Figure 1 (cartoon, rainbow, N blue to C red):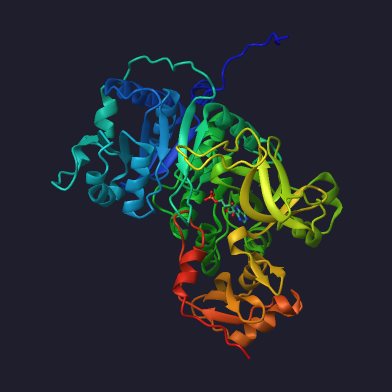
Figure 2: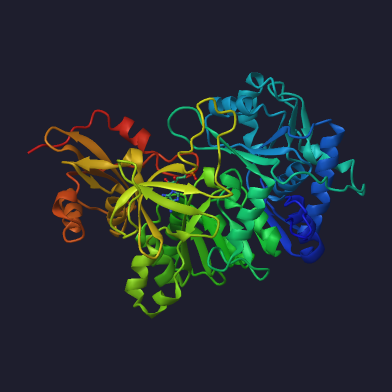
Length: 543
Ligand code: AMP
């Protein structure tokens, strides 16, 4: 029997309609590539995203067509989010930090017909446009007067000139099946070609609903939200959608991701909630500490994308009274899988005991099912000790990659994440490693994340990566590669002594390598593949 309820499909356009109607004056602030701070609001974003939809119609861009963006977080990018997906085209956010050749490969694989780019990325457009025959239109995100004239560029259209023609024209968002594709994002895959997750309107709305919950991001119309995480990294973790759903003020950092720019924006715009990867927060804390600056409005920050070092959680909580919500997810999961928020029974625990929980990656939100599986394929117990490959399923987890000729990645309906984790009795996961980064020494596993976290808690260290190096007796032994803070000194013996009593003796790294920097990938994570390559000639000091 069919329920007698209205069956409206869950479409992204309903978010911007809602924000316009109920929170039209809630601000959307952007630091622009042009250098100034731009002020808009949800009503204007709604109007201008309809202009985008009409402008796409005028260029005969068909439904389902991929429209790519190569852009920082900002209001024009947000208008494209709604204008493209809302009008039944597919928004494809390209990561400008990839190599030009990789970007060209991705554009060709996605068969993007249009690329909308920030002026910062003109050099990329120059480098790739000849190898992208599928692209019919190149839209520069600028005023008509700022359009660059350069013979190395394809014919460009200015965004402002393009949408200007449709001011004041009415537009009704089309209605269609909620399972229609809305946006796509390629994984930051470090081996082989990147693969694309193709999100639907339904998966996007359900993910947004889930993230707004109190025990997840806990978003509200009272918040001023700063997604430092880029809109090209899994849709800024869904915040552009979730903020419209609750009518929050949205603050975009544009290209200003350095500590000073982020701090100033937070203070000027009364940011209460921020989200980003640990490397960005490290830059912010490094900027603030020597100046003795404090946050006047920031209450919570989501840290995810890679393991958040305990020292960072301590810093935010103890020095700045900012609650850190450690979160885990991936491109294939839209991205959110778990967030670390305490349960009622944890409130009685001491601060130190609570901290042990907060260091984990958290528990599943409604809509995400988790399990860990051992080498034999059997499901492992949720006892906080057994660790195995982490599998997920749910309505915002991929079923397959876009244009994938290698068969479904699912195993019995579950997506293997490639992460290794424990799950405790309360459902909190702790990621011990990427399966390809796991170090196996004499048949025993060593968690590279644990080794890194201990190094990062040393006051002289700003960054640490642990990798396995071949050993004739033990197969592999851990080595920790560290970057020192400016003007700090530390010897190998001192760091190795620092591990004593914190982990078992056999887990302590065999060596310490001091470097100037550790390679960072396109989404702000340490690139261990590259680090291993750089250390190819390195051999363990064997006693
Ligand atoms: P991406 O698809 O680029 O977002 O990368 C997803 C991967 O990042 C996951 O499979 C994890 O390996 C890693 N990751 C994300 N969040 C965390 C976290 N909080 N702790 C440890 N690893 C994480």
